[in-house]
Length: 476
Image (cartoon, rainbow, N blue to C red):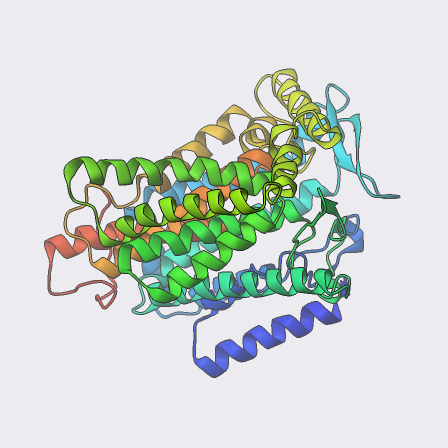
């Protein structure tokens, strides 16, 4: 393995900050997700795979969870009380077996899309084992183990606060690097964040769309930046609605502006989708006459924005022409573009491979699609998709119907849940892998353990979360 000096320096810097501030390792893990194209090194034996720096902190979180007294008793309690733990373990085993077995079992019987080793891009070939089977399975197992580790760490007082801090740090760094990337391009300084992009990815950071610079931030392309911005907007907006936090509001506004400037069709379509439940919630509040102050602010802001737009058109009739051209190229005509047709073909062939393998799948990492649900069916098959669907339903359920919930617990759990679901919406538009990522596994653990705490608090008010005694109560 060839270690990346830049990746090692960033890891050292994050560790130094965490140690100095006396934060937990889980804060460092979540914050490291801001560096979406920074690798810790390159593994030449796996076809040049370049694991990102979050893998280092993921392993440290697992070690930190295991390095505790009475760990076996706590692990037993997690598996007894959290049914999802068994599903996650079964899914990890199935993914590993499928990644090794299915590409060999169905070799040559269907097609796959793999990355070129000699040049950039993706090409179609007959299904066969590839190095991505091992690397992608490794990422998936790391995510599953991180889920179990977070379940263990959340039994400790203050861990939920560390998770909240990590998410705010993540999206603050994400917004900062988005601004730096945009300012650098506007000032003619080219890609000023190029030194931290050490991953072995195709870097699409110099592109423009309808005359606008595409914002990539610390990622390899604008769509990845837009997808994370969407998740960050969902997190900060939900936290603001739950708590009225001015920091969350300021960060949400920053992410919203960056999302609009990103020129990412993934971000635009994803924003339209995740806005629907917000609008429904506001309409329900208006109908019941219980409009909250945060919702009233949104309702008042929309007419003001509309009037400002109409005034601008009145004095400068062509002021929005570049914006309309951008929307036309990134959203309206996206499906008819070359990249849109190519991604549609990937999805078509991925669905075909699902049927070619009798619903078993071709194995994680064997190919790529352009939609997370299709990648699930294609790579994990019907059985793996069913297990992932159960986990997704547990996340989507949230803390609803669990009696009285502490305000801060509800705010954090709801915010990370919104972040994960929004990220999956973005992934459903562009993701090529069946792995939902760390930003799914950590929120899933938070929601499930918080639900347990709510049940526990309803039975014993002497130990309110997060300052309880570490006991687990069964999830109904």
